[in-house]
Image (cartoon, rainbow, N blue to C red; front, side, top):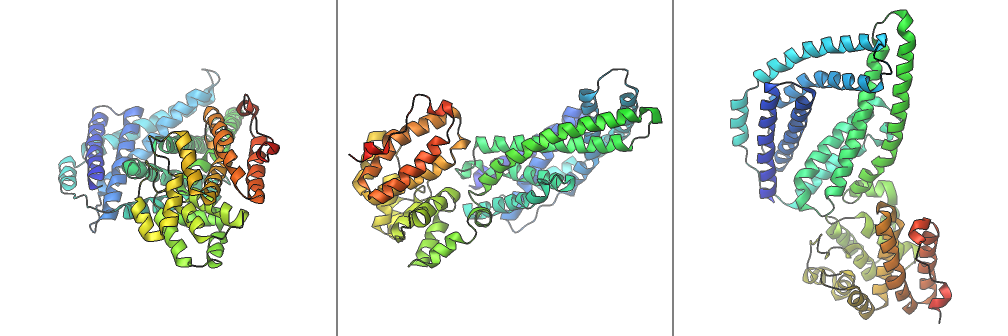
Length: 461
């Protein structure tokens, strides 16, 4: 693991100094943006390494560089935004705004150029050269990621009310989360290109909202002749309209990142979904400590889906059988992408019955659908209940898939998995049939096209 972080550390150090040299040659909006991104990425890996070691790595010059370039970056963006929203080239109000911004750009460029010129490159290179990336385990890295996510999440309630300050703070927290997630992506299966891209898109969206807020405040405060105030009002209204559209998108997209956090943040997961339900369930079962141990064991793969699966079995079906609930919590731990266990480890910790159930739901890369179904049937009714509960939870959250994937998912569910229910007690099967039927009825017409949900009579013969 230390190799992965060390390689990313070295790459980010080199990219930072390359961007610094680019900006030193010419300060443009693009070169400044690239330098600031490289600085944030470098700060993220420095923070990660510091958190994994006893020695705190502080490079104050990087923070000073970010502060000195912040205003210039804002003025560049304001100029770009003005060009996007202007309606006529001869609009005197816009011309006055541009003149003021260009004067500020000229003044700030002198300050930034001096800061970059005086940046102690040799001193920083020597300091970074002596940094030792420590060896550590996944748990420590996961704790760091959790802290970063919970910092991001802490601003949610105020940010979705539209508060400029907390929206900005949430955006800064998202940058730290994203730039750290990029480093540790190879270590955890729940971090992938898709979630990194969603973070980037949300970050861009929040950045666009922030830029509008900054420009709106500038336009509201700039001194112009009274006869031009009507233009001020017009452009403020345009910005507010644009902000509303972006903010609505933000409120919709932020849920993807929150769902991502539920994969590893037990604190958030309990707060957001289950509250006391899971631990109330545990209190009513024998071998409470054994079940909690299985929860912690599954935690570093992902937690939301296994927990929901266990609650379908225990709460919705009313089955309080310990081994089945533990198997629900562990059922993804042997997957190829998320391997954190072996079948022998599960057997040693939780017994043969649990190991058999987890194995029954683990589909090998070379295993075709027919053999996979036969394996589930071979283990028996508990394996079928586990599979139908696993599939039911995933189907409830199927909207995260594209239409083509959803159609394929429903086809396999209807043809392969739902028929397994014929082997179960009638009441248990009726539960699964009715729950899947409700989800099918709520699906879009393009998903249903060419597929049909079987009548329940077909399973009662």
